[in-house]
View 1: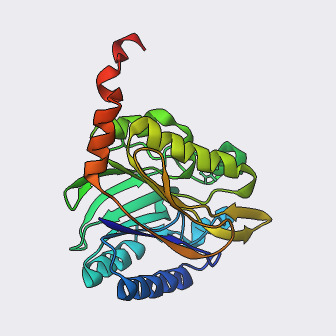
View 2: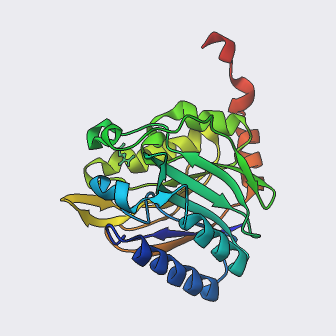
Amino acid sequence: MKVAVYQMELVPGSPHDNREKVKRWVGSEVKNDKPDIILLPEMWTTSYVLEELQTIADDALEPTKSFLSELAKEYKINIVGGSIANKVDDKLYNTSLVFDRAGNLVYEYSKMHLVPMLNEPAYLTGGKEKVQTFELDGIRMGVIICYDLRFPELTRKLALDGAQVLFIPAEWPKPRTNHWVNLQIARAIENQMYVVSANNVGTLNEVEYTGTSLIADPWGDVLVKGSEDKEETLRGTINPDRVIEVRKSVPIFESRVPELY
Ligand SMILES: O=C(O)CCC(=O)C(=O)O
């Protein structure tokens, strides 16, 4: 399964411009070498303009849900649509949308861990639904959003439910780059799964975002890593046999004793 990640520089506060950017990017990536699945960053329609979100967020996932569904259908590709600011009954959620090649919404997840360091709880509401895995082209996968990466029990739950691939849309700031990179590799090693992330780049309100999106394999080897400051595309391949191979050679899932911890 071929993956393309959009490490994107967002246009703050302009969902229309960001949707146009994504449309152009998908068009050119498909022409270059058609991926099976694409990944976008966190809050890619609006960027991190928390104070403006009440006016510019999607309304019950629209219009971005229809936009991504049409893109998936037109190009016959799977889309892990990063996440978007989503208003439901005046509450704002940070919601990820996943589409199959026919444009069907196969999963949605609202970020459950809100970031105190960025004052997110003052603006956003945490998702309350239990996490689930989803399947695309016969491969079981999961998605978490940015700060969720710091909670290993969340990713472990997805792995125990059969996920072989973890997607992470993010808007992760530069001062904590080492946490961003090392925690992703840790999640790949401890769960013996692929980790595929899309962070953004650029600066907003004096916060610099750190790029370094990556694709790590189930051994924890980084197959490809983005720069810290350039918009770019990362490409890699997911091979489910590699997950099985690694899980056989170091059988941690068989060695667990969860009744003791
Ligand atoms: O955990 C961090 O250091 C950054 C998290 C973050 O920026 C986010 O969840 O949007």
